[in-house]
Structure formats: structure tokens, C-alpha cells
Image (tube, rainbow, N blue to C red; front, side):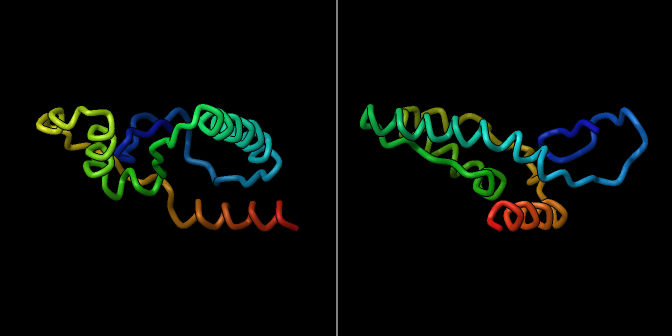
Length: 109
């Protein structure tokens, strides 16, 4: 199923199915991301840059405030006059949190 940024369903390519948990598949995707994150941290450190950081939780919780912070840091605060009303929804839910806890408990055992 494809979803729009606000969480609504765009299209369904098949009948709904139960979500399957596959810790090994998650780890396969996570490890390259962790390596890239470490490489970026090293690059910022080596270049003596203090990057602006954003979290997944911060975006849907306060998208306008986050945008204002970034535009101000870039010297583009005048762009805040543009209509920036986003239609975002946090796509994580109780199942996501349960699966995340399960995965974290597996990798820390």
C-alpha cells in the first residue's frame, strides 16, 4: 500500500495482509544506515560543522517551527511568509513501537 505524507492511502496493490516481523531484514537495512550516519558525523566533525538536527518525531509535531529554525539558520527567514501549511501525519503507531522494542531487545541480547 502506498501512503501520502498525511498517512492516507494512495493505492492498494493487493488485499490487506498481516504485518510480518523480520528482525534479520530490519538489521540488513539498519546496518548500512548506521554506517552512513557515522560517516556523516565524522565528516561534520572533521569539517568543524555543527549540523542542524531534526528527528522524525519533531517533524509532524511541529513542522512550521522546524522549518522556521532551518530557514533562519540559512538566512532565509523571509521565506516564512510563504504558506507552509504541511499535511503530514506521523506514520508510526502502536505496532511500530512494539516492533521497535522487539528489535532492540533482540540486538541487545
